[in-house]
Length: 184
Image (cartoon, rainbow, N blue to C red):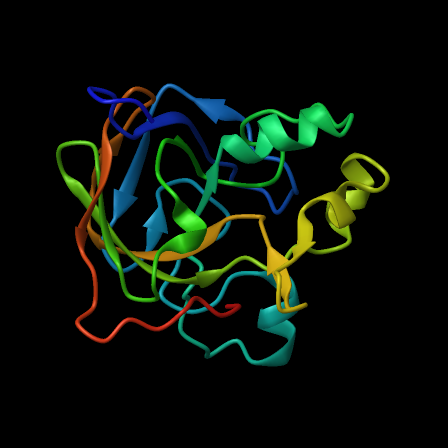
């Protein structure tokens, strides 16, 4: 990002049904403690089908899925054309290194909403249903050989509010004792 630019929201998406891709919207409303209004993953307890099957009483640490649009640029260079909402994210950003944030970081989205980052989204085989080979393209290896998951981060809603494309996104708080993001 060059001087004078700021991180922003590129797109927002929600879907009432449990489908992989989510249609983009003009705006979404975040509801504190629940997630995205009108989205299939809204709730205090886990809503992702595979997690509900294991234990439906688990807290929902995946209320909001954020994805950096820079991943689309990277995927495009590898021959995969993917756009906002297609990987199931609710909020597509540009100019903020989501994957570098420590667990517990608080982000402000637009003028009202705040969220707390809970962890990494683990890419699943549904990504390959969108484009064959796409899941592997969302994974990488760090210099130490560890797996790098690039399919975005998950968060819970602290303060509700309306979020729109073009809104600013910025880090409000980083934990005093930061821990790297794990899968949630």
